[in-house]
Image (spheres, one colour):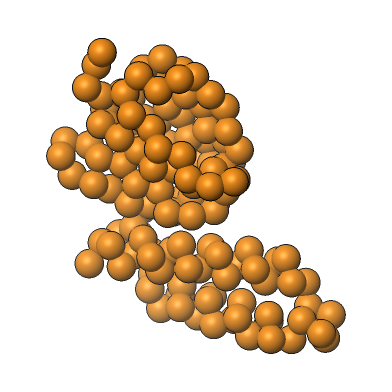
Length: 135
């Protein structure tokens, strides 16, 4: 069995990574999936959260928002709606997004879309967590 597998991460706008990795942790819609070389084939819906993978002995972090994961033999493909590498995240902007989402949640009785506010809060929290790992 191989020690690595190819990981490809892309959005509709760009290819973020295509490299050999030893492992990956990916936020699926119903929890995290851990991938190692030789993983069984699968398809999964992605959620929002911090994704990490190890390539050339170095752990890399990014944030993904929705999409799909395909795993076949020696290849994993992450097709995500949106993604940011940890070093691309603007901390101040993410903090402000989190503050706004939390503020909207306090106004739930005033007709605020709670599901939308919760999703915004989850995205902001994931962005801040990934950005903190890059420091």
